[in-house]
Each structure stands twice: as structure tokens, then as C-alpha cells.
Image 1 (cartoon, rainbow, N blue to C red):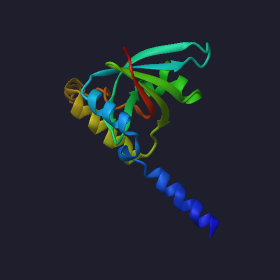
Image 2: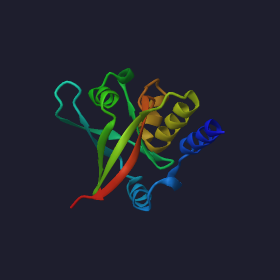
Image 3: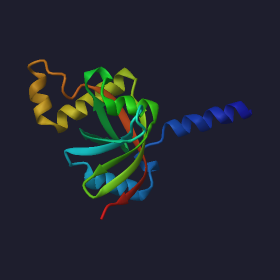
Image 4: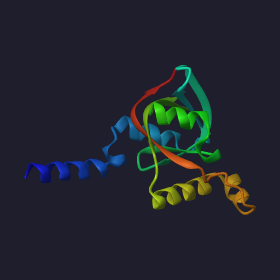
Length: 149
């Protein structure tokens, strides 16, 4: 019986969506979703120092979603694999996030479509074989948000 309850609780936790995010996070995501880039602050896997990188993003299901090009051989992506906590700065909002690489093929394709829809240049370049907008996706799950002054 306890095992069944534990499995049910885990299943409910996995179904968490934007509705489960605190109202301040939901409101902040809604305010920034039209912005073009976020600045991701990761902790360097070798140096331990803050590493800043501007990156395209989309907002989907209560998460910020980014993509790593070059088959994930980017510093920010490798940094997140080692230390999945980071900060995303967008406009006047700062999100404290937890990074979760996306591995499910259907979810990856859905994310690629979101990027191609938001970023016209990626969509246009896709017709000539460009992989822009088709990188390794990472969901940045917001844990909190603060307004920068």
C-alpha cells in the first residue's frame, strides 16, 4: 500500500505544470515570454566562477526552455550538467532555476517547433539545412523570481 501511494505521489509530481508554479513566477514568465534572449548565469565547471551567456529561449508549461548548439559542446550546457542550478536574467526579472535536460524525442521535437515558431530567422534558415533552433533542449524550471532594480 505504501509503495502504491509513493508511486502515485511521484506521478503527480511529474505532472507538475505552470499551474503549480507560484503566482509570482507565472506572472513573471508571462511578462517576459516575448523577449528574445535571456542571460544565463551558470557556475563554471572548471573555474567555479560565474559564466554569463545570452541565449534564445521560449516559455512553455511554466518553464524557460533553452537549446545548446554544437551537440552540447558549449560551456553553459556542460556547466549545467555539472551544476544544474543557475540564474536566468530576462528584462527586469531574475529567475532562480533548476536545469533539466530534455531527452524524450517527442518533447524535443515539440520544443524545436516552439523555437522555429518564435524565431523567424531560425525558421527561414531551416529551409537551407541550418540546425539553428534544433539544439539540445534544457528546461529551466523556475524556483523563484525577483525583480531587478
